[in-house]
Structures are given as C-alpha cells and as structure tokens.
Length: 180
Image (tube, rainbow, N blue to C red; front, side, top):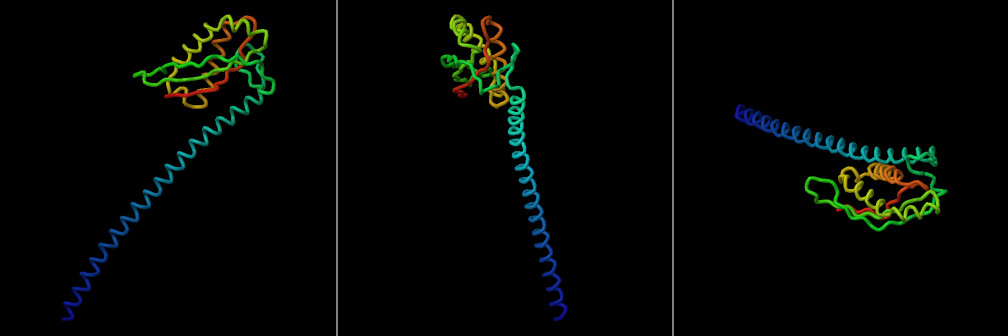
C-alpha cells in the first residue's frame, strides 16, 4: 500500500512539473511580446521626435538667416513681409504609376515690392504654368511631409524668379493643401 501511495505521489509531481513548464513557457512568450511592443512604441515615438527636431532645426536656421537678399532662396523674415499676390486654386494630378492621386492647393506669392505686381499680372499665365508643372511632377511621398512641402516651396520660388526682371518672389504660402 505504501508503494502505491508513493507511485501516485511521483506521478502527481511529474504532472505538476509539466504544468509548471507550460506556465514558464507562457510567461516567457508574454514577456517577449511585451518587450517587442515596447521597442515598437519607442521606435514610433522616436521617429516623431525626429520630425519635430527637424522642424525645430529648420526654424532655428530661419531665425539665424532671417532674410535672404540674394536672388536665390525664400525670405524667412516674417516681421517684414511684402505684398501678397493671390492665385486661383490649382488642381493637379500628382506623379504616380496609376495617376490616382490629385492635389488641390491655393497659393499666395509674397512679392518683393508693390511695384512688382504689374509684371506678375502680365506673366500670370506663365506663373501658373510653372506652378502646375512643378506640382504635377511631384509624388505623394515627396510632398506629404513638412520637409517635402518646404522643398516644394523652395523649388517653386527658384523657378518663378527666373522669369522676372522687376522684382522677385520672396516666399510662397500654401493657404490650402489637400491631397486625395
């Protein structure tokens, strides 16, 4: 009888050992999932911080450079803005394989002086053509970030200033920017 009780006790210990192994495996898997989630969350938050840091460094560089007096680049002195020239809205297809995305954008040009406006009026069809060509050559990926929009503004200012003689476009402001 003592032998039977001893055998049952050994079997109980073996079965209990199996369930404790299963418990250890489940706990280990749960621990690994939590670690993986933490790493993923950290990576996502860190990438957002990089975008914010890039925007902050861009603001700092514009404060240092204040206003560009050269024929290239956009003005960044917002305390001394020039006259604004509003253009009608643009609706263009973005560059893509399927051509399924389009951009609707409203643009205001900051002019170097009010005396420059008659030349802009005269060349408005050319201005619109340059803007349409520049916008439609861009993909969604190129213009979907803040950095992409700023690069687009730089490119547009550079292209537009090649056609003017009486003044220059200091900056471009998007007053509407919708991608679908």
